[in-house]
Length: 127
Image 1 (tube, rainbow, N blue to C red):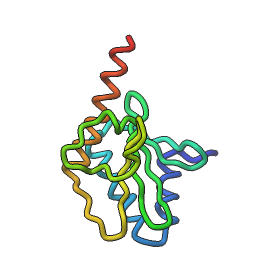
Image 2 (image 1 turned 30 degrees about the vertical axis):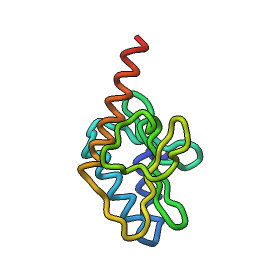
Image 3 (image 1 turned 120 degrees about the vertical axis):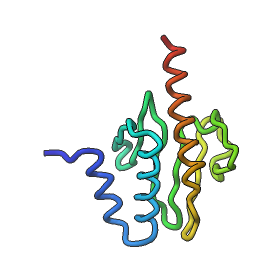
């Protein structure tokens, strides 16, 4: 029997032996606190993704960082200047977390909520 996307994400986090596992777990918790209705998916051969009225964001562990990427990041307000990667693209924006970085939970929750609201607005406009 195949495992659920949430179980796959649990397995991914459990398999990381360093600080990145704790960071991924914390980011995941913040995303769910910001939007309790968000749905976890497992896409593109092993990428944890989060959906609410469409793709909201994804995250990945890299060798020296954890990357949190917002699908419609270029369309989102970022008053706290969280985005620090992928700024040159037309759609995606990302936040790279390095070892020891503090997570601004309040600002990140606001960014997740803005992304969900953006998706909901786009969905209403299509109707």
